[in-house]
Image (tube, rainbow, N blue to C red; front, side):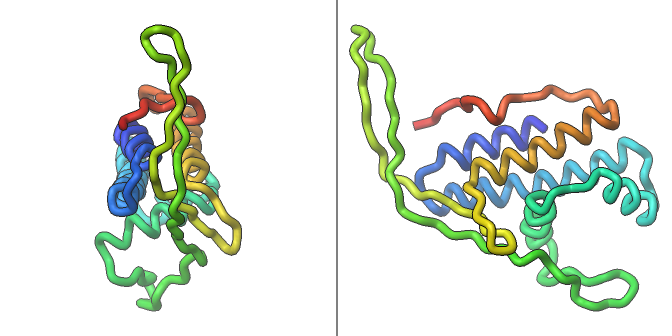
Length: 168
């Protein structure tokens, strides 16, 4: 879970498209790995056991999209194990738009300081609905928080809907 938090912070604090995309991709791969680790921790060995528990957790579309992105690192296409047919995926896209981030702080002498940094805003579009990067990643992390708490799996809960460390 700490790895998810770090990739979340790195993606949100990134200013270059490639850096943000790399951390988003790492975040999605990590979320997929969390699913596998949780399944192993709970002793869910067979596909049917794993599928039943996964369905019981009711993952939101954001998690399914994150896992489709994460799975793309291993597979050119995803196929149903029984039929061999290409699996249908959720209609999703990622768009990057140039923007400027506004920052404010207080100087050592107590006077306010404000500045802007050229940046890129990533938007994830899922079935026609837009999610900013922060909301998308927060939803995935909140899902895993609920799973860990619901399954009584101990972990260090880290903040994500509040301030994350700024890395200039």
